[in-house]
Length: 179
Image 1 (tube, rainbow, N blue to C red):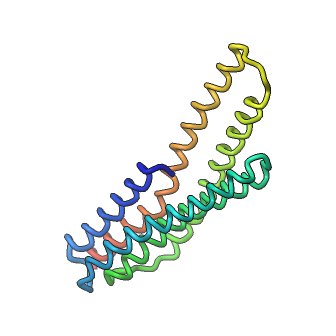
Image 2 (cartoon, rainbow, N blue to C red):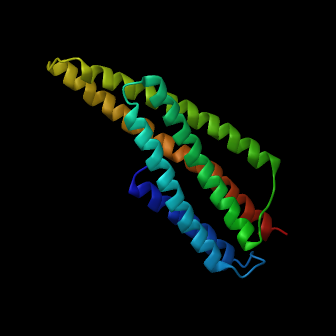
């Protein structure tokens, strides 16, 4: 994930913290703890993704290992976001449990993993095309189209990665305000 992705995550966390404390649904006065944990979570996620990126770079020639690392990265991103939002709600004293939220999150995680599979397939196809030394215009155009498709799939995947955390945030706020 790029810097923009971390900024978006931080904005989501900030919005959630702002709503928790702005709507006074918190039971503990722990605003600094919530802010500190969300920033710390971003740094932990950055380090974890950096390590996975290094492993992916080391094994880039091995398509199976690269695919495994990409799947681990997807799982880590979704997990970090959901865990961060959940722990923020625990720190603020407004955590809620719901088995349906968990099931929806797992379903979306599987959808995200499927989207990641498409991303891996397209990326591997592009790498295979780049390994063929052929500078024909059609090959260049095909690689350009593949890069465009990879960008679209990546954008869709980034949206799906945030859905479980957003669902939990909305649930906590609505459940707390409807008491």
